[in-house]
Amino acid sequence: MARGQKKQYVKKLTTKDEEMLRAFRNCGRLSSKHLKSELTMADKRVLNFQRDGYLEHGRLLNPKTREMESVFQLTDKGRGLVDAQLNLSHFYKSVGGRHDLAVADKYFSLNQEEQHSWRTEGELREVFQARLEELGGTYQAKEVSATDGAYVARDGRTILFEVVTRNYGKAEIQAKENFATLLGLELEISKT
Image (cartoon, rainbow, N blue to C red; front, side, top):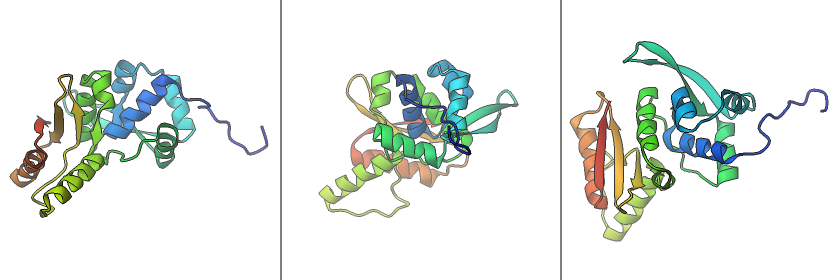
């Protein structure tokens, strides 16, 4: 290795790596529990992604246990890796730690086929825009708001999913409901 050149720790992506990166793209942040229990990622492998600058680590207070928990998210370099290696864009736009982890909890409650059907808020905005053009209509930004995600359930129904925190007012929730109505899809709301 040439002098001053950094060692690369992640040389080839495994299937588990790809599932982890897909989950980060769809959820924003993941906890250590998600990485270990849901994705069975080894601590050393996660550390290698950090060392290569693909992931950053943070800590978040768990309000139930009153303890700090480790959370991870993609860096710009990590998003570049996902785009280049998995051809995925439209990354989930992080709202906040607790909110993102609630999205991740829902994501990991789905089977793998449902996870692979997951669409992010950015993708849903594009679907809505196309639908709006078909209908020849316009809406005020505050009247309609895309949900956190959507997935195709086992029975073939597309389900929109939204995490609602105590900071959401009636108008924000109504905008999510309007979005579902205009697309003709079912809306599942999770309150945190």
